[in-house]
Image 1: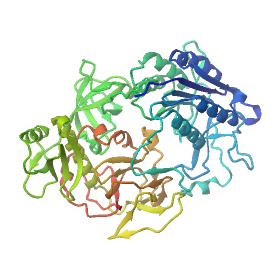
Image 2 (image 1 turned 180 degrees about the vertical axis):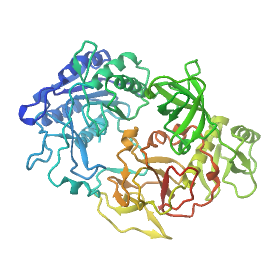
Image 3 (image 1 turned 60 degrees about the vertical axis):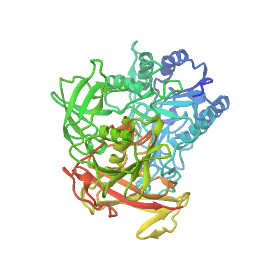
Image 4 (image 1 turned 90 degrees about the horizontal axis):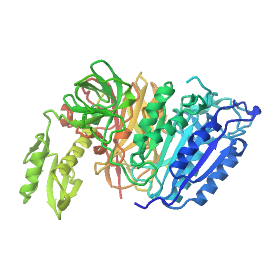
Length: 623
């Protein structure tokens, strides 16, 4: 990892808006007084500050341009915005709710004026473009931290005090009809898999979600300041620079829960990077707490993420890198597991707020269901020993195995018996029993998700709408009742709900090689608030505001839809290397062994409590 060459900060603070704009004055100038010394202490000596009239839209964009010119590969950058935020009518069809989030630059109006098209607001799309240019300049060895201390700031990258926003969305007459026109041009193109390549990692802290106001608070001297700015100053004072942004956000969250409990701070991006450094901090998988009661707690994780009744957990202080064994943790066992929530019985009373705890899976409980495997000939005794150590749920068979495990050309390979595809491999000289166990768990999770069926077979389904890069429709290619695509081709996704119940939904992509990618919510959308954007009303259809670009590996691929009457977010458990890095255990249930994959759409048999629904779309990526 290349060490950062320089640290740059761009601080934007608008406290005194012009009277004719309709915006009230706020305390953003005090945010600068509060946070500037903190950033200077962290080594951000290249600091540019824009205040009031200098922070009009042209001024902000010019400051970004000059900042980009000063940056070099490997640099670290902070963008800190304090001012009003507002939702504004989406102008390119890329927002689920038809509204862009925007910074209210100096001079931008608070209410719609005839002919105004948002040219004085800084839209999330425009900010995202400037940030991408900056990310390209500092490269993969640098990184960027963005702080948005404004209302409606929860997706800006794409108290009793004053409100930093609080105005109704700025929309033209007839906006309702525009909002319902969900099939936008689709400029937000994402591959079905892949990475950002040479772009720098980015982390976004937002004071409130996209649908919330942001209330000012008071610092330790009774001075009115922004709630996020205050929490950030405090959090940086408490955190060590060897810790990650994930740990820092846990501090920020706890502080803001005390100061402004009515709002939801949010975080996006590459959270496991060392604060103002370049190293990756090893964060083991954990689950967030949903509710604390006298003798039990509920967590945001269930069978979809490997939690089953009998699983053993450890309840630790938020910010812990792993399950704590130094006496600070509380042991617990799962007494009830639903699709995406579980109830735990702790060994002793848990006191405090939900944000103060993270929960780690220490011993998964797989039940009595097994994975059938076959060993290829001439394998080593060591391999058989490792398999025996991996799990009692593995059963060797001679015929009809799920997988074949073999040693070939210096590698241990796991081969899917159904089609002969290698789903995973390990270099033998560096392999261990524990690594093989994790690969087998990963395979089990992927198979479970492929086969999982629940709910009403005619209620929910997915449909691809083939298009070009600009989102315009093209003809589909169908072979054997299956859509076939090639690398470099595009499609949009339609979600169809024929039922009488509205649903929140997630969509994941299960590749031919078994890797899993989040589609909806997107990879950077990590909180429950992000997931609240993705819902479909009863008896309706929704074309999602993204355009997919297909890429290898080749073979049959599955897009899987999960839906529930309550919002949920699977994305944090699928990013950074797949479900195995976030799930920590195989969700093996009776449904695991059902052989009903020869279906299309939302066909299903019911699972257990029917608290969620599934739909799927199977297609083929051809050479």
